Image (cartoon, rainbow, N blue to C red; front, side):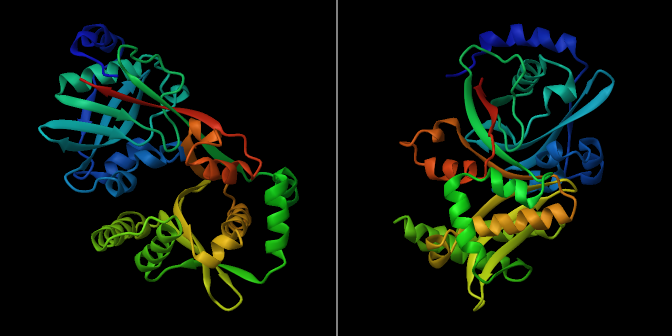
Length: 332
């Protein structure tokens, strides 16, 4: 469903309730942008490195600044051309509790349409449009479930919270000699190799062009996330030094976010990723991090018929109550 130009005047009136929006060229002043964004965990996906890491091809990072109740709110996005039309995607929207402006989404939509943006996607890696008053005319709202593991309790408390299947598998894994290591060399090669193995296991073999593009993507992440110290690649190894499972994590002072990962065939058979995340939780807790964010799945993944139900069950198996998030898609 699509929002039409007829919806703009009503939404445009919302602009009168808020001060003027303004663009911010992120690449021209990344330090200035990041100082506006701030350092709260919720702002991770609005920072310049995360915007750059999602600005591939003809896309570029862009910022929008709007004062809300005396505070400048920074909204990061990625702008690209789709045919002759401009498209803006945001990775995480500021929470309503931060902005205090229930009509911000409607006002922003109207302003962007007036600026010539034809399609807007307000997504959620870590926060979405939940709680805001939203445009209702022909707008597509998508629900997600995000899994945030609270690390404030003891390992014993986390173990008790595991669902029975995870608990049984973890007890078996903990009896084996395994080691968690941070991988600092040849990251793109390691990630690409395991992703190829993952695709073969799913009976979805990759062509040469797809493999090259995947490798280039991992190199892109290394440049924009690993080198600035935000992205870290961890591997779980058996006693013979064989790599079983990988997880690429984004880290702040209080939160770690699981971005991508894969397991080797042997690691998949023994559920090595369960041990990997258990080890990561202990490492992060010892460093003072409060949360391990597993990312999310579509809300429909809770159904056994959904293709991502296995991912849903794996994340829910840690005893995490998922948080409901909302993403919005609107076209002019």
